[in-house]
Image 1 (cartoon, rainbow, N blue to C red):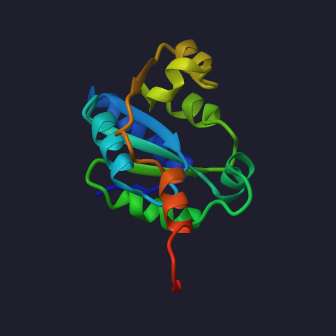
Image 2 (image 1 turned 180 degrees about the horizontal axis):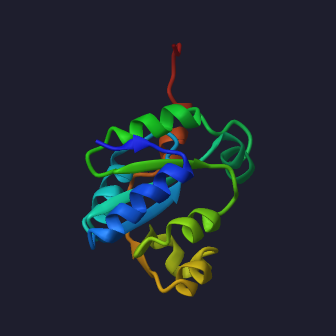
Image 3 (image 1 turned 60 degrees about the vertical axis):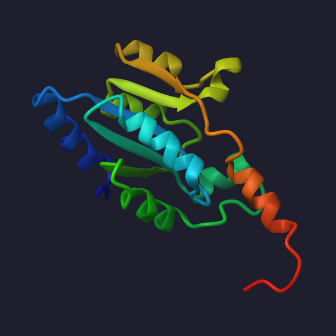
Length: 161
């Protein structure tokens, strides 16, 4: 089980992993309405190294990038859910629009993003390559996305709680 860390704490843990010769994998995202697609993605990411750190877009960042009404779940709650997963060693909440600052600070061996970046620019690629890290793209589990889940919920008939 992982933990929610401040960047300074994550840096200490990162250095410990480096001294032990362990591979650090890093990914980032919003993880709003955690679902099986997220779990599949995180399991695949974790399989690439000894530890997985997750950068979690905070509430302000998610609102800017995802639009009105998002996030549905506050950042601290999303972080607790992610940290409770066996695949996740640490969660770091950040408010920037990209994970560049975290990547420069932690310099993970492998930076993982979804396969949808195969056809579009990955903003953090230059940062990762500048310190000698590797970028890996992981295919999503088809039919599982937060947007699809939100749309299904909106179509429900009847009272909501």
